[in-house]
Image (cartoon, rainbow, N blue to C red; front, side):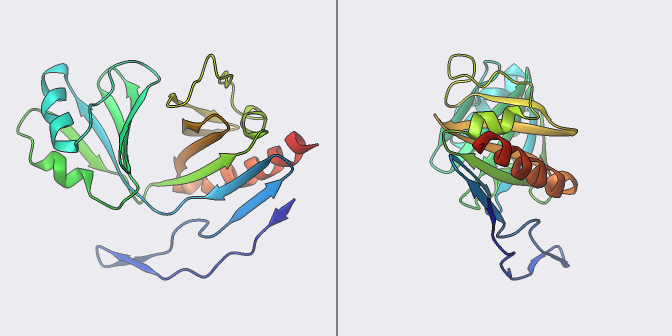
Amino acid sequence: MVRAPVKKQAVVKADGAERRPALAGQEASATGVSVTVLPPAERISLRGSDASRAALSKALGLTLPQTPKTSAAKGKRTALWLGPDEWLVIDEAGKDPLADCAKVSALHSAVGISHRNVAVAVAGPAAGATLNAGCPQDLSLAAFPVGACSRTVLGKAEIVLLRTAQDAFRVECWRSFSDYVFTFLQEAMRDAAA
């Protein structure tokens, strides 16, 4: 197992506060799996009724999924179904989905959570085994195909899990749990590679 040293990152100024991305530049790998902290992204927690879904979809430029455990993506923007009227919208290109939703007059709630969440990529043939060391979700391709997502747990931390490819996952966790989640995945990766 190799854990790369933390790379120095420029301070990000937001709302007058200085912030450093959590776990910036950290990565680890072992035979068959790698764990990498993903770059910052724009995120919103979105709530809306069936009546507002079409207007929100149009504003966001993608169709909000209606089926449990599914996601929808267009370009670098992804919407993950978390509940009957709830989605996590992630924009990896840095475009602000909160601003897009502000143009919608239909009743909804959109809250910016970009600084609350941190994302970690888990990839490789042993990615599923690494995650299953602390996640009870059935990660077989039949039960959790590419594009599937779920709010679940990893060890003692709540996460949102998205399967991005046959052997790759995106783990979204709260910033305050990011060190725990990364360290958990690093230890689980070592066991999965054995």
